[in-house]
Picture 1 (cartoon, rainbow, N blue to C red):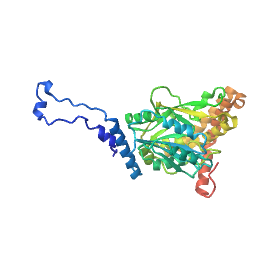
Picture 2: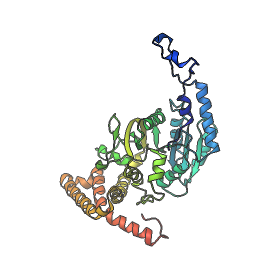
Picture 3: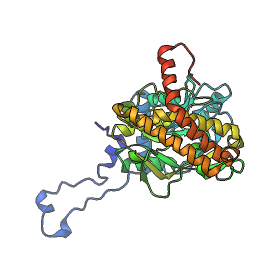
Picture 4: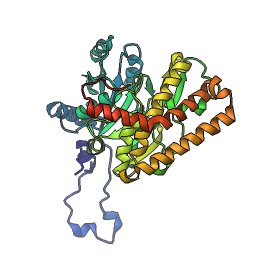
Length: 389
């Protein structure tokens, strides 16, 4: 059963009470004698009191979803990056009627991340709690799972420590959730904030760096399209996550030098259980991308990891009895893509950075079924081994 929040109780009652006039007078043909019921917004001081009450309830009962919204920043060694994200959240507009909080999940950092949060807490507004949590298991999937467990709102919005939300991001997210109650998750409109000029034709691979530009109108991600939003700038319904997403994601641990596909795994689980997944362009985010992420070696490693994770993300939306057939079909499709790519770009398929990234993605997608089978074997047969790379 959906919970009824305190503001909902307050705003559902009229601010002008009905008089004690008998009903017969209200039904007289003389319309000039009828009482007209009007609804007015609650005074600002009443809204503040209600919000303070809900914050006290959240403190007294940490396991209750009594707030409207929760922003989670997952960070690893984000001492230098974190302040700008927090400053963006401090400047949010239109949130006066919302009871919301911010949680920084420190994903096993070795720098001064904890001190940054402590410094901000000393001057942070009391009516917007800023909380700190530590997650020792390395990986964004573990940090997000931790946040879901401790969030005190039915809505949880995830930001990375290099995501800078627009001034209306929180309000836009909350409004969208109210207008689309069947949306289990919805992603932001994410544009790049580049430290240096991207390589030529970067737009062909930009989506792999969590850049999302799908127009100015909301769009639903259809399951047949096999396209989903990234974890950066994603807002989820906490209950949908708790009901649909397993505690241990198969892609939570790193593939190569980083995790890959774990955010898609979460969204696919929700979609499989009937939740709608949306793109909300009103939620705008700037993704700060340093020059190091345009280095050829970094990009090739990134696409290698994404390719190796693809078998898992592909099979999640396929019935188990169809896995053998669909695996063969996907492998045939990947092989065809490799051949077409080599014919089209020839020597540039290796020399050009963007073309080489695309070729890497196709090649490692082809290898992915064998890699994931070996990874699963290692996890089941040799649980004491380190997470596979």
